[in-house]
Structures are given as structure tokens and as C-alpha cells.
Image (cartoon, rainbow, N blue to C red):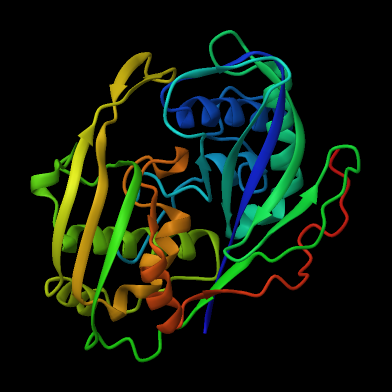
Amino acid sequence: MTAFPLARYRLEWQTSTFVRLPDYAGSMLRGAFGHALRKLACMTKQKNCTGCPLLSSCPYPAIFAPPPPAAHTLQKFSQIPVPYIIEPPDWGARQVGAGEAFAFHLVLIGRALRELPLIILAWRRAFARGVGAGDGTAELVRVVHCGETQETEIHRPDTGTLAPHAQAITFSTADNDGAEQSQLTLHFITPLRLQKNGRALPPEKLDARTLLMALVRRANLLAEFHANGALVEDFTALLAASARVQDSKHLVWRDWTRFSSRQQQKMALGGVVGDWTISGPLAPFIPFLHLGEWLHVGKEAAFGLGRYTLGAREKIHIIAAGAKVRDCAPQRIGGREEIT
């Protein structure tokens, strides 16, 4: 069995002054989080992290902007995936009035789990300062750990402590030789951006091989850079297996734009949503399809794009193949740390 260190949390809020949510709030939330995290973590107050003497020990770049390795055996990286994923409220612009409740989810991976107290505090500071158009403010009510089989409240600001909780999912890669014929449907909730030559592929240009290898690469890089080491030893065998997988798509394009404060311009970040059914020798990809429900897939996954779910029938198949969530037995992460 292989353990992959990750956890999903639901942050529940009550607004103090109205919060304006755009059509898709992922980018807005990421910007507010990054600003607050840097304010909390940065000791030198340099304009940027490049050349900072504390770069290797500061939690801000480790979480929000991890520097790529100077050298790598497979390729040269200009950037590496970050160890968090923000899952914003459902699509649709709206205004949350004072005193009303709203929530969003956050997935943390590997070493980012160690910084959970700091991350919660950063979110509290972000919403105290104000987020979005109009600088809406809110107070954190509680944090809930969302396992696949149960949910557990782990923190309330008035207690200032973190309750022990599970922090990994486990899966088996044994006997996944690709011989088993099966069928799974992925239900894409947020736009999926699988790119070629810097452009997101439309539905008619997408195929099963592109999807499966994107899932494999993302999980492998996150495991290598933020967890216990790479998951994949033989990419060539997986690439060959992916060529034997067939697919049927019911996908549509969803346009979406956001304003980049760093580039000072609007960016088009549309992608595909809908159902994507794949069939054939899927056994080697079962662990990655399961992980993808947590890790997302494609570009801009950090603020929630490329999110999908598998239906009940698909989950039964995955459990039968050996992928499951670790039991929610108490496992201390952060112990009873004070985070107020």
C-alpha cells in the first residue's frame, strides 16, 4: 500500500460586511491568501523572494511559490506545482450579506500540512483585511476535516487548538498490470485546461491519453516535490497503456476571465466542463484517477480549476481495485497547537 499525504478542509465563515463573490472566486481567494501569508511569514520584508537569505526556510515560498530545483533528472522546471488547492464556492456571482454564512474548501498536500496553523491564521487575516471588490470581511466560524467517509470539526477560533485527524489517503499499485477492462466517468465541475503549445485544448482536441498522463504527471510531481518521493518509475509503460484507452465525451467550453494583478491585464482561462467517460485497461491509472479527485488536473489547479468527481459506481470500482481513504483514526498533525 502507498500513502499519499493530503487532507481536505472546509473553512466556514460568517460575514461581517458583505462579501462580493465573482462568477468564479478561486483566483480572488488565492490572491487574498497569498498576500496575507506573505505578511505573516516574511521576516526580511524584501520586495520579492529572489535572493532572500531565508528563502530555503521561509514557509511563504514553500507553500505559495515553491522555487523550482536547480537541476532535475528528467527536465528543467520554470515552476513546480504548489502544495495547496483552493476549492471556491459554486460557480456564480453573488453577494453574501452581513451575518450570512458561506464556505469553501482547501486541500493541503505533503509538507504544507505541517503549516496548517499558519495557513488558518493567514486566511483569518485575509478576511479581516477584506477580500474581493468592496473588501468584504468575515470571521472564521470553524474548520472541518473532510474525509471521504466522514467529516470532523478540528478547529474553532475560540479554542485556538487543532484536533488530531487523518492526513493521508492510501492506495495499492499491486496487480495493476492493465489487463482489466473497465469504464469510469469523470464529472468535471470546474473548467479543465489541458494545454498544447500554451493553448487550452477544446473538447474535440482532447483524448484519453492526454487526460491520463496529465493526471499521472501532476500526482507524481506533487509527490516528488512535496511528499515522500516520486510515485512513478516507468512512464513509458503508462504512456503505452494510455494509448489503449478509449473515451466518450460530453464536454462543453466555459469561458472565464480574470484580472492578473501581477501582469496588470485580463487573462482568458476558459476550459471544458461536463462528463468524460473512459474505458479499457484502466487498472494502472486507478490510483491516479482517485488522487485526481483531490488534486484536480490541468492548468491553474491551485485555485480550483480541473476539479472532477467520480460517481458512486466508479468509487465502488476504485475501492475494489485497492484505493481507499485511510481510516479516520486520530493521527496528530499540529497536536494541540495554539493558532489564535
